[in-house]
Amino acid sequence: MGDSLSLAQARRIALAAQGFADRPHERPTLRTLQRTLERTGVLQVDSVNVLQRAHYMPLYSRMGPYDVDLVRRASEERPRRMVEYWAHVQAFMPVDLWPVMSHRMAYYRERRAKWSRAVPRPVMAEVLAAVRSSGPLTAKQIDSGAPRSKENWGWNWSQARLALDALYMAGEIAIAGRTSQFEPRYDVPERVIPAAFLNAPTPTRLEADTELIRRAARSHGVATARDLADYYRMSAVDTRAGLAALIESGEVRQVEVEGWRVPGYLWTQARVPRRITARTFLSPFDPVVWERSRTESLFDFRYRIEIYTPAHKRVHGYYVLPFLLDDRIVGRVDLKADRKRGTLLVKGAFAEPGAPAHTADELGEELERLADWLGLSRIEPDPEILGGEFASRLQVRG
Image (cartoon, rainbow, N blue to C red; front, side, top):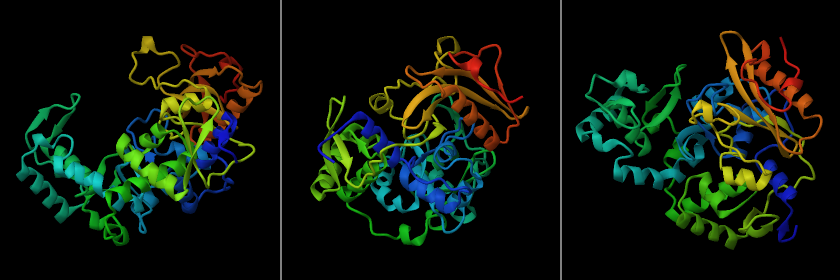
């Protein structure tokens, strides 16, 4: 491969790096999940549950229908394969990243995390002692009626909850799992993180930065410096240092990508498949689309999540998922899981310019597969607000 890439090559490299060129397993296992996590590097966690929790969807997009209990097993059972931390944002990450995050934890420890100024140090100490003696505990279990204040975007959190957040960001406690209501259960790291990683030598700041950029480069395949910085939410200074180290070692090299105005950086071990055969939905929190400028430059697909947009100003809908077909994003669909009725609601379906003629048929089949995975027996359009060029052509299951 030379020092320049066509845009089509860059797309295929990026999708292969994210696991879309892997051979699918008929029945995904923990090993399949671990391989997929190695590709994505992180699984963003978010409380939005319109269709399915954010961290479940990227696994579905790459592995196909799978038992979601694999996620619980990977994050709670020994040997623990992944753990939550502020990696991209709140996210699952491979457990071996724990020592790499030590400098990030120290940063928050020095500042006592995001909201801890409102928490007196004695409260912080009491909360840590309670977790140490009785963990794992949820915020509700540990909250003894401490004074409350209405801050932080209107959230009504107790001082105990703020203390937990501060201790978590500082790495003094860890998330041991979540309840069925999605509440984190906190415990001390020595009961969550395997000793091999908890007691591993602390890397230098440059070593840690280099490792994070290494993983970002591997997960992207080819990327701009801005893309690499965003993956683990790093500063431009730290990104440049890590990137320079990888260029010097030969793990990354600079390339020109068709249509990109800035240099691209290619992971030198990246696969360059001749084609990608894929058909799936991408969550708004999927690494393929979470950096919107990258999505535009790779796929010529302008994407904005409209959850926080007033209803009358939305263009495509509340919870819209891009539809990936082979190596292109050919459409977008506004979906909702109506679990009480066992129904997958199709609230909107929109084709992208140049979408192939068979897109509607492929989309209909993928909706069937998604509904089956979610345990929904019906697929139906929302007759009041369904929009989109080919929405009426979809074959829905009644």
